[in-house]
Length: 87
Image (cartoon, rainbow, N blue to C red; front, side, top):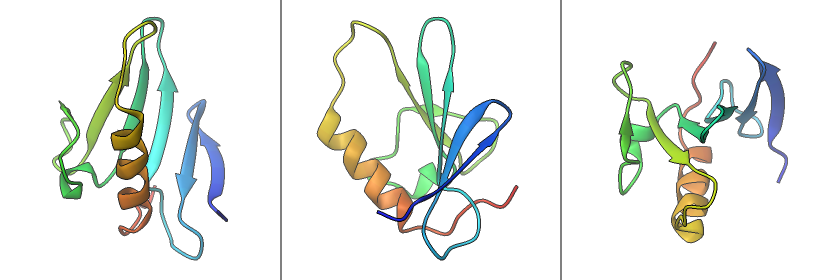
């Protein structure tokens, strides 16, 4: 509740209320949806996809493939409590 929203680089970004920076972003590709956790290395368990940026982690959601909704929700809740990434 109260999450700040913005669009940067044609992708929705989300920030925690009262905090600077962003904790989550989504980007649509032809074959999957990329969920970006800007402080993903601090999440438990760590999301599966690595980035060139040390602290950033991703989850790729592909059409027709099952994913753990509870785990994704938990990651989002955890990420919203961490300091945001300033851009």
